[in-house]
Image (cartoon, rainbow, N blue to C red; front, side, top):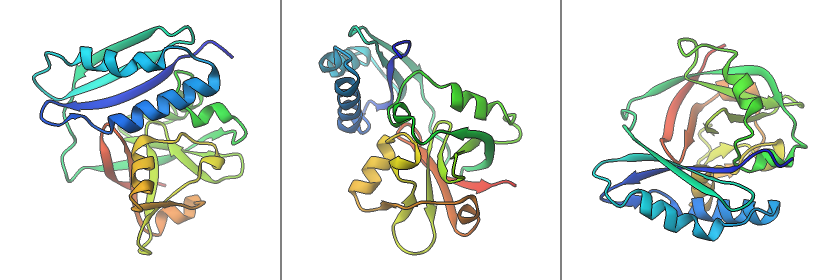
Length: 208
């Protein structure tokens, strides 16, 4: 399939520059190499150009097409309050763990959009998808983390059929998270979090 682009969504803070920039560029470069996309080397330069006159926090969206075309859009960003609690529901839509493209962040988002549409915004702040085996994978825009009291947060392995999220990668590298297969029942047994590089970790509650 060639009808998609690679995508990175980043947070920019004027006082601190891009948040987790190195991990975002590494993921984009790795995915571009595996899929035969050109132009990833120019991504960081384009990002810096986009924030040259920024005066406040921004949400940055970068897309890379197969031919190397890069597009960058920006929008004001307001962080969530520290006490935010997201309501999470589980979708009937399933992820195919054999679909290796799901391990990369692309604009091919049909399965995530289908899951999100199962619930209104009034019913759920985020929707979690399972794979064909019933294992927890990820949210439509977040990685899933569970604090079961054993120390490091648990987060599903890539082999379940999910994106290598940038926040997820950082927490694993810092040994604040480790991979473990999770069932929906597990999510009821500890402290649930969802998160991504843009928003950070968010406390969550599974609604059944």
